[in-house]
Image (cartoon, rainbow, N blue to C red; front, side, top):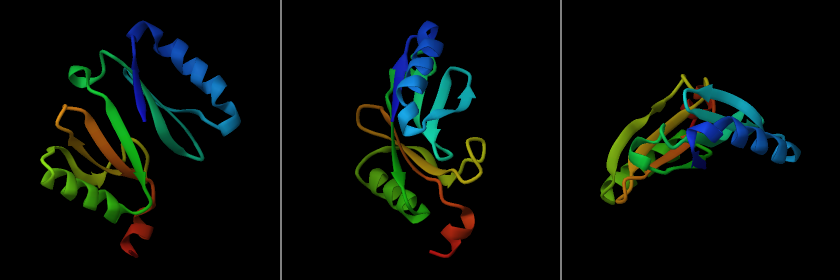
Length: 126
């Protein structure tokens, strides 16, 4: 899941969610220009970004998958359903060493992602 906030409010909003989600063990895990990833147990699954960092004001919707094969299946199904390819299935080591995802644009232009955080070795045994 992700939300967009005014650029001037990014640090304030991140600080709020870090405190509010502390009981769920959420912490700030990653920071890129205009985007911050929060998560628990080593998995950033809640992203806060500035409205300026969103491409064309899009919403970013992310779903988790337990297997890399499901990421691949999502991407194929989304394209078959008419989505625009916004990123082929594959590893994204710039995020985390086990990040494997695919992206598609829905009919409204939103960025839809499915991500698996399973190690490559686990994926090979599937």
